Length: 247
Image 1 (tube, rainbow, N blue to C red):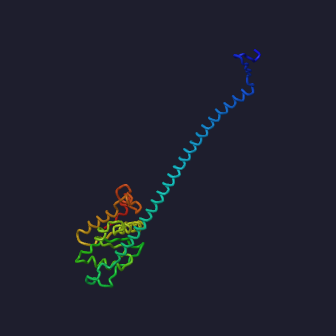
Image 2 (cartoon, rainbow, N blue to C red):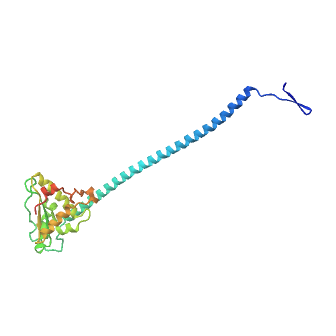
Image 3 (cartoon, helix red, strand yellow):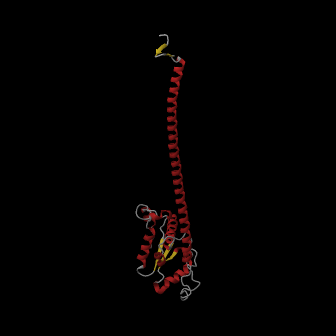
């Protein structure tokens, strides 16, 4: 009762710990628990931030990838366009060359032959598809005369070169472009363009075939103006009705 006990022959003094010490011990234990929770919270926050950072990084990379793909596609389109324009220019140069060369007789129409002067806005726009082999090769001589006239050298075509030149930038493309120009010029005059078919009996249907071939749509070449208008052709139904050339 007085804080002393007899254990064998020894006397042991027992003292209760002070209340303040007990409270401090409890606080320390609670602090340790709190510290563990804090560590867990911090770890969780770090992990969350890492996940967010990775998502942001992936989003940025995806955005940059899409931007690069768009820019690269545009660059490729421009390169193809430039190549096409260069091919068209080379084809036109070929078109303007004298077809006789050095191994044919002189032009039967002479070196001074001319064609009627074409006056834009007054005369109906024309194109010509001429068979150079027709009339004992009279078609070749006519084409030779056309090549010395500013208007006709751009609008009078060797029909065999057109059907052979169906590649991108070839003679068919040049014919298509000139046909489109003639359509617009004629429309401004309230008329339709004319296509002269020069050759034998079969050249008329051959010329008609070339016109339809030139107007045929090709959605792989939309950038070249060959988009399908819904009828399989690059001209709409209304354009075909109003401007399909008279032959």
